Length: 114
Image (cartoon, rainbow, N blue to C red):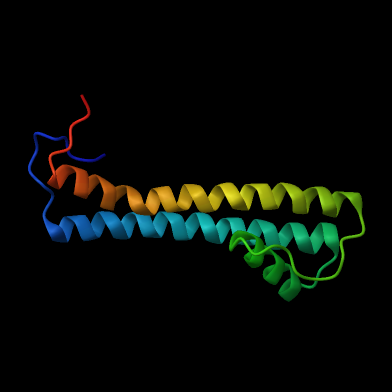
């Protein structure tokens, strides 16, 4: 996907396109994850859509759930799994977003793992 060490550095305009494509990928995954969380909170916890959105967004943002206390075991189980998923997703999203930048820096400095 990325150019090898012996290839020339990608032109800046192409690098921006690569960065944009990574951003779009991360935004799509976050959007799908937010929708899945909203659906789960709405169906399993009985939250209104706006409350389901808030709880899902807060978990994806790393802040924790907000809203009425979860009463059913299914809702609690979903919230726990979604929280674990959200934490890992943030780490993965950061990796995808920073990968082109780190690669460009390493390529610019002629970093070679030996």
